[in-house]
Image (cartoon, rainbow, N blue to C red):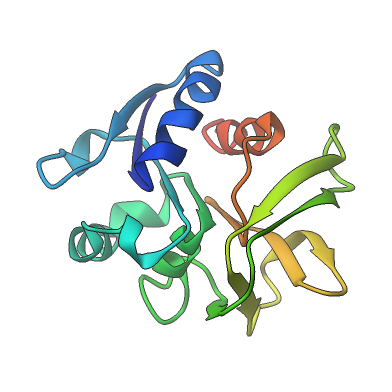
Length: 173
């Protein structure tokens, strides 16, 4: 499986070893990348400056094939998927000014039930449709991890292998 990665270059490079260990080949997406060749997508970013290829990502996600391809969106990467953009996620992503923080969060349905979440500013999900599974939430931040069909959306950045394991399971029929 070939996974396309877009967003913050440092974050993307940190993910390469985890994805390789799970058996994925990876392609860092740029303006010359062949989006038709990739089988899944990871969008990972902490600021709008991470998205130099914003217009290309938005246009590519309009392709109907992404309704069935696995997508993992972290931090601001989730913005591309929400109701106001590609509509691949039946929720809205809101951004607010907030300090960067890290927290240990609980994900009750996963084997590795705790993971370190890096919050870059304030990314919040709202107007969440009933067909979205909320896998983790806190009283202070609300819903943190969502799963809707082929989409896994996070309001934070993480290097936790459990997230990528969950993403890899989305490729199973």
